Image (cartoon, rainbow, N blue to C red):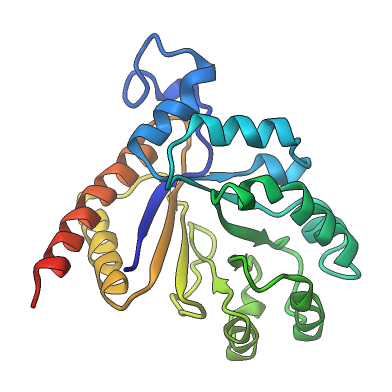
Length: 246
């Protein structure tokens, strides 16, 4: 059965009070509360530094079974080495986040490439074998030159999702390259009509058997978290309909 995961990029925002977090909620309870309403969070922290085992254990302890963490790959892999000769850095990163995998709380790992890194299919083809096939990965390309069939075919061969990153600068086409789809919905606001379109497309993909991971931009307001919560409600209804269908 396909699953819908919806959340935001990060959770530690006092500015979400009182629209999402209760006014008197302590900051060290944010994740626990967030996980009571949403079922996934995208973590940017791992982009800048490698997490300690104690940090990961605390995350697991604060969240219920079924909640997952989508981690942004460390910057040494994507921005310093720019995928070149990055096997050692990738192995270290995967080893450091293994506590989440062992606890069955690891969602997709997002490789967000620099905007000035132009398409190099040989580079990508050399890097992808560094990724163990038992995990899920998504690639966010931020230079338009990557958006072509040759790249999509490399991703499809390893069941890696093309990250559909919708922003005001570059909109990645919705090309399905894996058994799941990873969305980064980065616009500051989404109208009710736009949210209805997102929900409709999500229902279509779920019906096709695709798992979905959708992350709204957090900004300084709780709107993204509320959008995600609304989407989960729609997803639950769609699932009930599918289960009742003959």
